Figure 1 (spheres, rainbow, N blue to C red):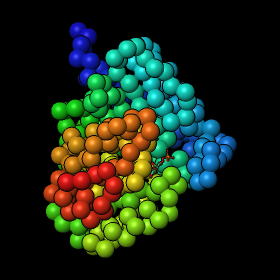
Figure 2: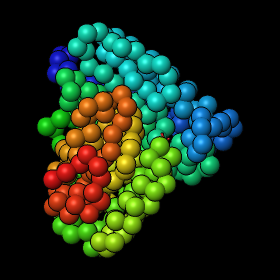
Figure 3: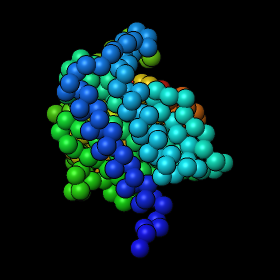
Figure 4: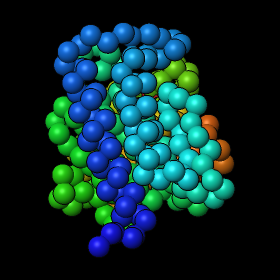
Length: 267
Ligand code: IPD
């Protein structure tokens, strides 16, 4: 009998598409014959980003023809009035991919009526599939995961996302504030995996002055369904223009928000 729960159908579709797209990215990464270009300063693009996004877009359109689509690399589709919207980063961690570092992922989220319903992040090099549906918990390769129980910044591990959009001064101040309180700063080059790691308790927090929806929406659901705190990323024009982001272990929320003092995110 067909599974009629739309959220579950979208979760299963996102998992299958992420695995298929991840397999393509992995194959192309290993043969290392793709072309690399720059969209702007420090903004890498490989031809595999486009190939992978086309595959994801086509598969989702076949399965859910009325849904909208926002991808990092293509023009997207508006979808029917009021329909769900898929938000996709075909390869998050593009710089790693382009430079031969096996730390990147496929990120697929589905948003409906202002809520993230489904979030899937797939790391094809480690074969790790992080998946969440709203009110359904977060799983890593099928096993439930939870955010860490860190309650103080001292000894905590916090990823500090970087891009050229926010500017040097703001990034350095964020880094200073994170380390001042005793946290160890990380930067892995993939916001989606950074958030997935917070969901799985491998890191205690993730902060960034500006991140785009395709890089973080799936990861946001992973963290919140794993019991973690996430700032209101979809506020204002977050979906189309991005926003600042704080995500962390639940007990770390007040300390991290106060420590980093990111404009627009308060207790
Ligand atoms: C970037 C990565 C990075 C984050 C940036 C993103 P890309 O995405 O997720 O970790 O800090 O904000 O732009 O370029 O690898 O898809």
